[in-house]
Image 1 (tube, rainbow, N blue to C red):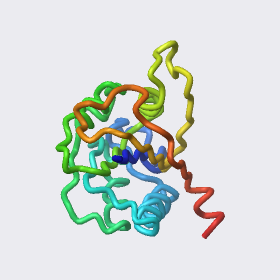
Image 2 (image 1 turned 180 degrees about the vertical axis):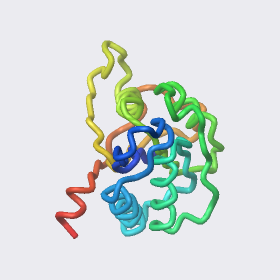
Image 3 (image 1 turned 90 degrees about the horizontal axis):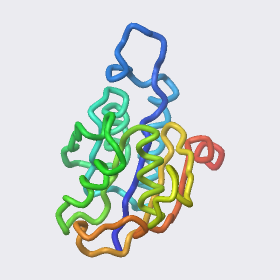
Length: 174
């Protein structure tokens, strides 16, 4: 059994409207929520063995905060296709992982992350969100379990939702 962790970037700052979307940093709330979600990963012994992230500034900052807070000590793989890409791009990235990786963490943006979760949970492409529709708020963290031994065999519908946490819930139970 392998695990895929999916994290939407934390809350971004919209104060400087002259900044291109790619360059928007985290807001204060995002700088608090990202490490909080990393601490959750550490607390529940769910530290990823690889982090793949969009290179957009807010996603990069989220990845760095999460990595530090959960004790991830490897390099982060910046995936250009995670910014503005499709669900297929994220799934292709996962399918290309070495068999030794058991728990990758994907960090990116909506609607792509929501589409990716829908694709992994549902084998049917009847509509944009198939049978599944999960709204992922900023810093929302999803854990999917997949019963593949080789990532290259991952197909739509192979995942089962194991858990889903949002910062507001984590704050409430702290």
